[in-house]
Length: 107
Image 1: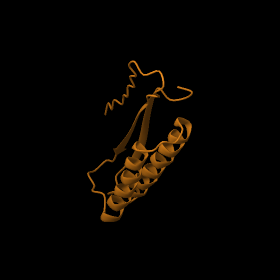
Image 2 (image 1 turned 135 degrees about the vertical axis):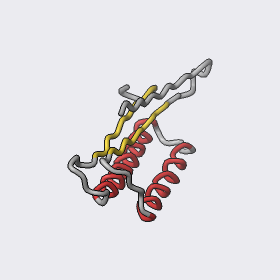
Image 3 (image 1 turned 90 degrees about the vertical axis):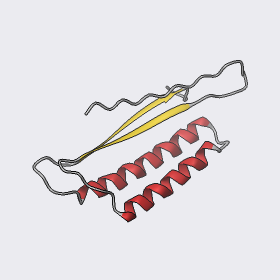
Image 4 (image 1 turned 90 degrees about the horizontal axis):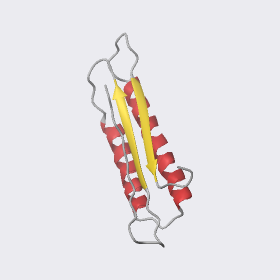
């Protein structure tokens, strides 16, 4: 598996603007196919709604990053719980998170 994750922020001709881009990629690797149950899907939908709310937020970039990272941690936890119930095989299931930030404070 070769997963690629990129983000790019561009600010043109707006000195008073702050332009940010972030990409979070969650890679779930299991030996056998499995499907997320309804509970996991509901949890992910709730996290997605809260992430959508952040896109309209006026909070400072550092706080936005903290909240986005917190939501990413929630997604990771949901996925870890889901793969714990995946069909058993010799290789343990894994969840990997890739994060790429552009234009964020400290990056």
